[in-house]
Image (cartoon, rainbow, N blue to C red; front, side, top):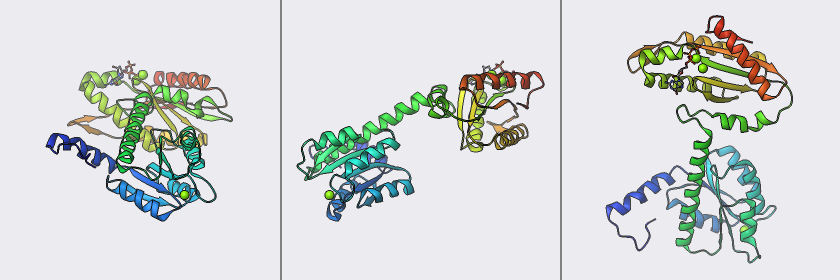
Length: 307
Ligand code: GH3
Ligand code: MG
Ligand code: MG
Ligand code: MG
């Protein structure tokens, strides 16, 4: 989409190309009971290189979102048989943060306060049909920009910059950490003699080892909450069987100890020590107890798990 009054010199086209490339990463869902209306909105979005899916009612929309994954923009009509667009927005906002999904409401209805209804339900914007194309694109762009900013803000606030694992803040704010019932498992994990590794190979290689470890943790524990607590220490909170958890941790520990990495031409070996607890207590006591176990793993020779 090139605004009519913009000069078509290269420097003005570059941001547009960037925007189009960026749009190509978004999957949009158009929800409307009218096939004609869907087709029209689809054509507008496709001109922006968005991938477009269609649903003719709310339930179909929810099923598609569940099944497709990665739908980041929903444009929904208001009046539809069975459930209306506002109820769809409410349900989506319970599941998706503003940084995960942008939502725009549309309606031809003259119902009073429809804009407010959509916005209160969590929509980013609303347009009355028939709308002006240029206005549609302006609102679409600002909505996508806001979603990107929200996403960046969320990442910056909650992810560790070096390893891209969750940080302490995310960990302690997580509902699974704050509220709990029943027993759960927690492991504190620390790299052995990491200072020596930094001293021998340099801080940069140390950083790459941390990244490598974080990748491994994510691969071993896709079903757990993994966070970098600081330095070379990670925490894993696991809600399922303690047996499975401990077995997996031990396989991980052995896997790491037996792997020789090649990082920038250097042969790198490292090991980890772990403290593990399985109990029905608050998070701070779990951590304290795991830390005591980690301490004994270190003092009894490292490269081991103490529970
Ligand atoms: P131990 O086996 O007892 O855990 O010994 P250690 O050397 O691993 O522990 P120590 O606490 O003495 O040293 C931790 C080191 O981790 C020191 C610090 O420079 C390094 N470190 C902390 N954060 C980072 C980081 O982000 N990158 C790198 N490269 N090093 C880090
Ligand atoms: Mg309708
Ligand atoms: Mg250490
Ligand atoms: Mg440490």
